[in-house]
Image (cartoon, rainbow, N blue to C red; front, side, top):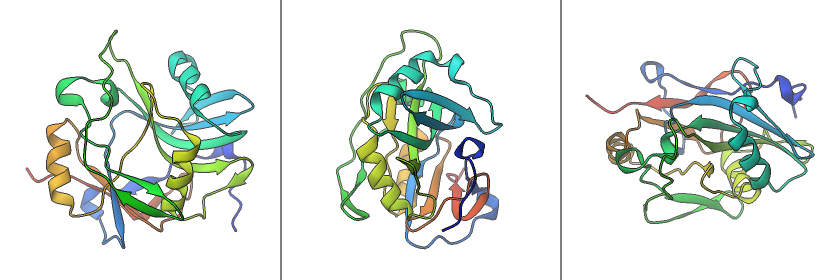
Length: 214
């Protein structure tokens, strides 16, 4: 297993842009979140929100820091996610998902699409943290663990609430979900290989951005 250095030096892995997309083996599909891509570093009750440039932006989001601290059930963890106002919008901006969640040894159980909990804005630009991946848990790197297994663990570690969410994901076909998510205000989707690994700070051939046809 490759060691990737001090976790605080990690940066988010990124997907290939749509114009350089390649075929993905056994894909899952997530909404393309808009906002600030961060890695949450949680240890002994301390929370740091480190953005793609290496800056801890936690001071700018004290409500998120508190909510994340209360949501994580672990001694330490590193979680990939987004600071976004999309989960807290009412009306058009509400994400129309609660679709598939991992259960068991990397297996997933399909569920009916349904609305996520809504939190009306009580002030401008209210954001939530949307967890998408789990990179480290209780002292162990998970970067070489298959994506679906990381997601199974993520569901166990993070208790979702108004200001902390766990991204939903679906299976193909892609087109119908792209259209639904576009209507809800999302720019597109990300396809990820179910067996994909995570290399911090790199662009991966196993993920790509998909955009709806104009």
